[in-house]
Image (cartoon, rainbow, N blue to C red; front, side, top):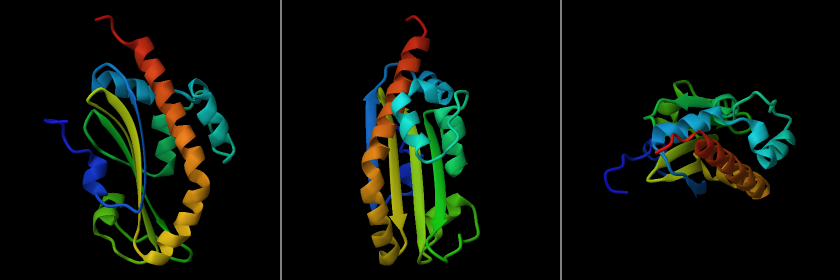
Amino acid sequence: MPGERESELQRLLPQWHFREVHRIAVPGTAAEVMRAAHATTWPEAPLARALIAITGADISAERRIVSDFLREMGEVIPTGDDEFLLAAVQGSGDVARPPGTVAEILTECDQPGILKIGMNVRHAGGLLTTETRILATDERTRRRFALYWLFIRFGSGLTRMSMLRAIRARALREAPTR
């Protein structure tokens, strides 16, 4: 939308090989909706909780979806009030993660065998969005990840939509009376 800033995810990972975007309309200010995003717990998103439980991750009742769980998957990159950005870098096979901050690696590294991963939760223009971008630094790594992506994408999409619906429900419950 005109006047909105570019997302930090777009700035750090403008290109990708794999991408998944989910969105849901949520009224309220970015601060209100993002506060709800950080407060939403796994019991509020039962489908997401069930799907994530399959992986063996800690999704106990007091754990927050965005603030706790996603933070464990990578490094939080500072953004504006309207976005939570998580970034990770993984070496493929015997390739080690290159030195540097995740942000530096995302923007500068072209070493073969690396997966650059970014995922955000953002509220802008009345929409709560989650977007994931993955970029492989070489063709072999891209092909290997494509097989994994084929198997997880559907469940990942269900998980993200369940999370967004739970965040929306909390934001509506906690919305100040206007």
